[in-house]
Amino acid sequence: MTSSSPPRTASGPSWKRFAPIGVIALALGIFFVSGAYRYLSLDALQDHQTELEGFIGDFYLRSVVLFVLAYTLLVAISFPGASFLTIASGFLFGLWVGTGVVVVGATAGAVLLYLAARTVFGDSLRRRAGGFVAKMRDGFAENELSYMFILRLVPLFPFWAVNIAGGVAGVRLRNYTLGTLLGIIPGSFVYVSIGNGIAAGVADAGDLSLGALLTQPEIVLPLIGLIALALVPVAYRSLRRRGGRAAGNG
Image: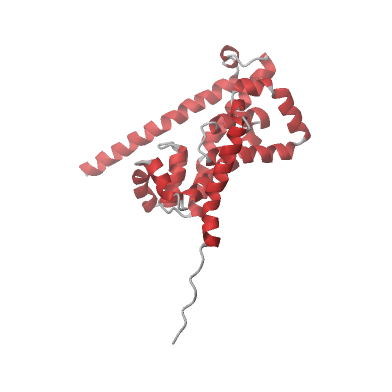
């Protein structure tokens, strides 16, 4: 007679599965309770520019780490203020460091939400993403890495929806992370360039008025790049439609 082994407890794995959701919930609570959301504006950035620049000058590495953590948490909770932080990164850290900070923070936040989508909360997150997941599933099945890269480079779907869809569709973490990291670099660079240009405009003109900023080449050129980025999804869809018609006629 063989003795059956006792059932395995799920405490360890369950804790790990709930960890991403716990981190996101904690971050959301801290963000609103602390009132940090009130500082997500260009006016607030200008009002506190001297203090921020002083802190960054005294604690540069700490400032970079704190900014990356803040960006990571905002992306993980799908808060729209992450777009402002991209511009603020260029304003505070300059073009190259600012771009690196954004790419690292956005990728880390996207991975957190991806992990959350693979937990017991996957069903509720799938409902939130609606039909986005179904639309992306075929592309992931064809080639995970290249499709994830295209989704990040060409914003056909909301950033948060791609984060959830990657986890729900079972995309491998390596492909998800690498595709995200590489795909968001061009867009991040353009937005950070705008922030860097605003900093230059404030230094020259001393204000953030639209008229003053639009006289700065450091602002105008990134805005042209932003318009070009906005047209990329249109061009992509047009090329796909033409390719589909050509295949049908062939």
